[in-house]
Length: 317
Image (tube, rainbow, N blue to C red; front, side, top):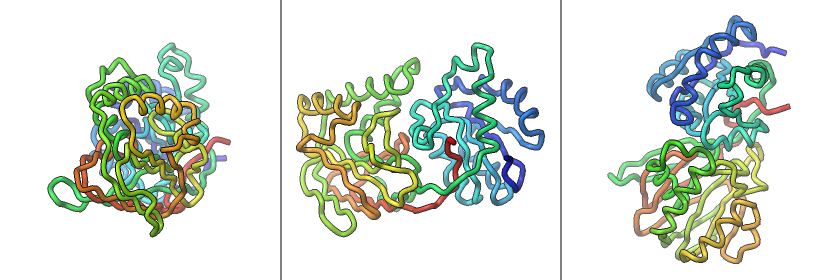
């Protein structure tokens, strides 16, 4: 049943998957009118353009985002300001938000080959299925210039090694996408492995003080294009999950990371998972930070908090 309210708006990020998703534009122009003749369709070239377009929508408009986690991260402030309802057609490199919502990422060949059946089904679901509330996270940090920054995130807030990997993915060959892209960057970062002297306080209790490889917060069970980092995390449980890895050398990290790929890292003596609502991390030296796979920079202090039921989104089924 089509939701009541303003006509939906389908927004395409033409830069998703290294620009490959731009080829979907004529397909969407062809199939969308038959699914919902009142729905509008836009291709958004920059975050500033997205902010303008989404900001002009009536409150409660369903926004169908065609892209990946980076797309959602960049559009998230505008979606919240517009009180929009989110539906996702996951077509990015990571798609961890789509997975958390029960949506299988749409493979490029499923529409490039000429068959649009899968795309039409996904788009119809995004346009018509009911939505329910999901949580978000919010991070506040002090940047390299001493300025306070805040940012909402939908999937992950990474601190340490995994953020350094995100920075390195910017230099990975564009032919690599998804998990292979992340693994390539991970192997490169292992060569320059660092641990950071972190003090981590969760819900008022100090849970770590000393060297750590990473201290990352998950709102979804997976990050890094499908790695089950926090298998028990849920996008609608009113909390975030901390993945804390203590001191690791290159060999130890090389042994541990494959366990992260299979979800068996939970039994590692230097890895800890715990749920929380508020978190603070301080570090005497700059530590790298990223959100939803997007590079934020380095900081010596940050605070993270869950935002329960902050956004309405379409799930599978």
